[in-house]
Length: 182
Image 1 (cartoon, rainbow, N blue to C red):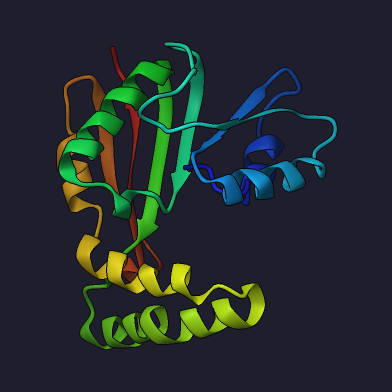
Image 2: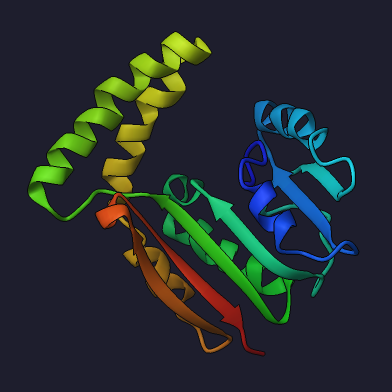
C-alpha cells in the first residue's frame, strides 16, 4: 500500500543514511511508478516489493516506521484486523505507524463540496491528465462507504498498541497513528 512512493522524500529526509526503505504494493502500476520514482533517490537504499500486504516476505520485527496512504478504504473489517496483525508483526518494539485515507468530512457544507469533487471532478481530471477515469471514479464510491477511520481506530485499539485517531484537512482525511508497545 505504498503507492508510487509519493511520500518517500519526507521519510528519507528524516532518516539516517544507514536506513533502508521497503515499499510494498500489490498493484503493478504502483510498483512501476515506484521503480521510476526510485531513480530520484540514488543515494538511498530502497527495496520495492510487488506483494500483497497479507502475504509478504517482510521479516518479523524489522521496521522502525510504517506508513500507508489511501489503502484503508478498500478493506473490510476482517482485512483491517489482519492488517493490524501484520503491522504488529513488522514493527520492532517502540516502532511507529501512521495510516491515512480520504474521508467524508462531518461539516455538511464541506461534505457536499468535497464529495462532489471526489465523485465528479476527480474522474474528469483523471481522464484528462492520466487517461483513466475509472480508477478515480471509484474514489468517491469507496470514500462514501468508508466514511472515516473510526472503525480502523476501533480495530487497532489493542493492548499491544498505543494509538490515536487523527483528522486532517477538516476531516477530508482521517487516520490512525500509533506505537507498538510489546
